[in-house]
Amino acid sequence: MVLIPAGISTPQIMINVAQLEKNIDKMAHRVASQGLKLRPHAKTHKMPEVASRQLEAGAVGLTVATVGEALSFALQGVAKIFIAYPLWVDESQAQRIQELIKRAKLSIGVDSVQAVEQMARMLGAQASKIRLMIEIDSGHHRSGVSPRDALAIAESARDCGMRVQGVFTFPGHSYDPDGIDKAVNDEHKALAEATRFLREAGFSIKRISGGSSPTAALSDNSVLTEVRPGVYVFGDAQQFELGRIGFDEIALSVAATVVSRHEGNDQIPRRIVVDAGSKILGGDRPAWASGYGRILECPEARISALSEHHATVTWPENLELPAHGTQLQVIPNHVCQAVNLVDSVLAVSADGSSEQWDVAARGLNF
Image (cartoon, rainbow, N blue to C red; front, top):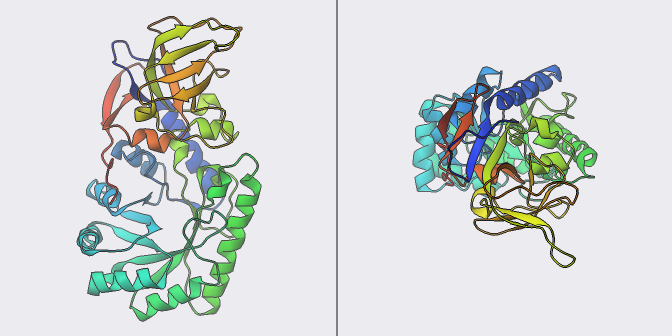
């Protein structure tokens, strides 16, 4: 647990740098021991200071969500970048992708013939420099195609003079207390089938990419060649409630101050109110979650309600209610949302020193 530095204004996102580095090293060693490559998703942190630590620990490159994020990291010197979402490339994106190609080896996700043809039209001769990754739907049912339908996309890419490097998926249904084993199995099965169809048709599939933070620890190289976890660097309340991490592994919290307290009665719950609401914590609450986040100093407490600038925290009857002015560390449910809501974070080292880290790729949603 990182101590809240004296004199800071709340709410304030803080990073426990020592724990961050432990989390990065732990995942790097785990993935390497499984014979896999690590291409972590940087949409979680959006910070060059975190990216550099991931790359130094052995990551082969970064995964991002948008062209803007990709360009931000490329300008910081990241040499290999994967945009792991299907893009519809317009003129503006085409110009920035051409800038990206000058700075980094770029791979892009696709899940339709139409998107491949559009990319080829907009990029012209530069399209051949893109490494295409075909997205497979492994059960999350967001984007992606069935394993068999990947073949038409690959053939379209070949006809357009573009290269298909591999296949990927996002097993998002792993974010369920009872879904982890099924998600891992679905991921492996779907990617294995897609790879088989493509190789039988003569395509050289070099990358088979999977993994989320919940599934990365359970994946192996029987099918996959790489994984793309993101949340693992910080952890959050969702990962804790899924049983993937312990409180001691959480590296990011929001420092907040108790601004209201009520002992409660038979009709009104015993509670405090802190000055961190949805505008810094984010508003995610899965149906299975116990609240809108957790309190690092009191695992039994629950955030029962969230407004824009305040969180209502129900407090255990057997524990002393915190006094006005007490500062607590709030763990967001979904850390990716929280980081994207601020321009900078406070990185706190083990010796108590701290510095500001800019969320450099924040807001680059295009």
